[in-house]
Picture: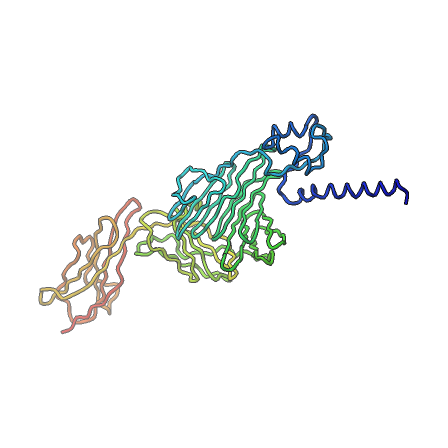
Length: 433
């Protein structure tokens, strides 16, 4: 081999070694590419885009640029994101309810979430953030999360958002991303990267498992050194072992008679059993878009019950949960009216020799009148006593012949929506000789 050949091979090997770091930077996602324009130098780029001229040597070294004042037009260089100037991306509190904290403080509507801020919700605690470009991050109950990064780089006006769900769940509507922009949600097990989509991320620290559920669009997932794509209508389990097999999201469940007025002490909804569901997550909100969720229930049964809902108009939806923990599509949002109204009643002998006293106590808020019915057990539908508009809490009935009777009381209220009448359970009375 000639001396020239040996020198040429050595030069090629040096070039390979020299360019290897730049190729690694291109693959790790922590750089932003820039194509050099006529007249650009690393110093002029530093003045416009870098955090300062003091990082020019680092950019030159990583891109194998020997002369920072002389770069070929059209050359593609890669700048680490950590070296770029940026503006803070504002994610503002739009709604919250129940026990929720932002960096150990009570949330304030309109307040901005900053890099490093932690968000914690307790049982029936909810908080929702919204960005300028339509990004929405909803943190439901029993969740711990942190905003790791929220930047808009000056170079290319490039968005870079990174959320971390340490425990619980997060629901995201990501903006349409351009070029090298990123919107990621990570858990201790995985990283989920999106491009204009709606998805949910969950993490169970005890099971050491994360889940990505995509309801619209697609997300790239990375876990345990493996990468995959979760498409719309599928959920993917993510563990230390890697990316699991996609699982089809359960279809929308239905709720039986969701629009009926909820008058009982506890608000309850009966869910039509859904094949493949081992649990149901049922949520109540102040609005049809569920931007202001106020209560939720996760239960294996098909009856979802809520114990502390005030009077008013609300919305309810539910979704099935598979045995693997993947949550399906939500049902449509049903509106319903909550109006606590009822009556408790009892019968007892009266001071009159042949009389019986029927007494009751109204339940709920507002002024009520009452109705009373009593009939012979052998003649249903033919009341012996049928009183309407009774204002007092009871009445006395005399002259009942020996026999078996059935009776009930109704509480009645009239409001802007019309007349509402709620009957007590039927009770029996036996009159003997």
